[in-house]
Amino acid sequence: MKAVAEFPCEASAVAAARHFVAAELDGLPEDMIECAQLLTSELATNAILHARTPFSVLVEREDHRVRVEVGDRGDGGYQVRPSRAVPGGHGLFIVRSFAYRSGFESRGGEHVAWFVLEHASSLDLDAVLERWAAELASAPDLRELLARTLAAAIELTRADFGNVQLVDDAGAALLIAEQRGFDAAFLEHFARVDADDSSACGQAIHLLAQVAVRDVATDPSFAPHLEVIERSGFRAVLSTPLLHDGRCYGVVSTHYRHPRGFPRHELLVVRRLADLAAPALAALGATPLARDEEGAASVS
Amino acid sequence: MSTGRLEVTATEGEGHTLIVLRGELDLASAPGLAAHLDGCTQQRVVVDCSELGFVDSSGLAVLLRAAAAHDVVLWHPSELVVRVLEVTGIEGRFEVER
Image (cartoon, rainbow over the protein chains, first blue to last red):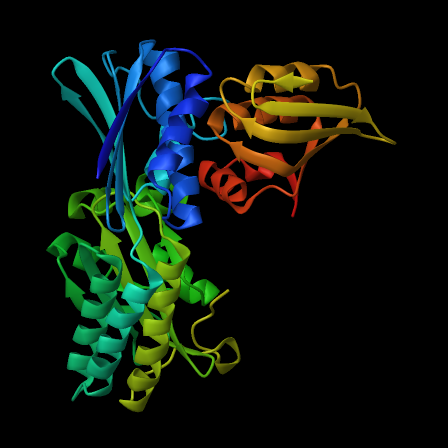
């Protein structure tokens, strides 16, 4: 399904554009429509303030996927403001952070800014998880359990790469035990991660909580790793600790080539996957992270 | 006062100015809100967002500018607004009461 509308170069067109998008998305989940309205508003505002031309809005809707394009007749010379906390200029930053994918194109004299939102319904994800639950339960050994856990996390979140880290014998650090898609430099750099490391997996074992990073390039805690991360080609990452009986047996991380948002039901389904994998790991004799009182790794 | 799709009501309270926003805050309605905020004489400004149906970065920029001169409290913002504040890293500029 596809719809296009034209809007004049005036401030009131911002509301008209987002209301047009909302009407076209009628019937989709409320949070997805709300997000599409916000991002449309940002792109329409840019067309008016920066391109200073009339603009068109195209909405494409297909099952749970929505693509919105805002086309103006400017030269596309405006950029994402790299620094935070400056009034104005947050628009494209918001688009990049909330969209599943976003970008720019020049097309026959038109400058097109676009974003895609995807909303796999939680029912779809439940079915995928149920299938993987059976696979995890029947894994014959540790290696196969790790491979299936990673494959499940990648499928559930449509990730481009991923890895599973286990706790070393001393209970002090994370070691990569299974991975998909990383280069040697990445594997070497992140071979061993302690709980005081600022990476997503380091934060996950420090906080004993799931850590989602929409864009590593704009997250200051990734600065020490940025060179290696840039070469390996990912921009977003989700790290979920494997917790069982209050103990951490490792971390499953999934990585994405493009900045992206993480809808709540997606975060939840990966936590449920981790809840299935962690007891299986414990049963196969994996080492948990030592607790503070045991005198080994301090996770403070 | 109504500016486009946004209705702004300002009341002088005890120790603060209360600004109630109803409607949608964007490029078209932001200047009207800015005029109200510029007129605030009290240090503490409570912005009631409970009936604010929409806000984008143009609206946040106005609130952020006010936060440079005042202690701005955002009262009952929507979940999406809170997420936008977090993503843009400006949540620390406001006191947020949920």
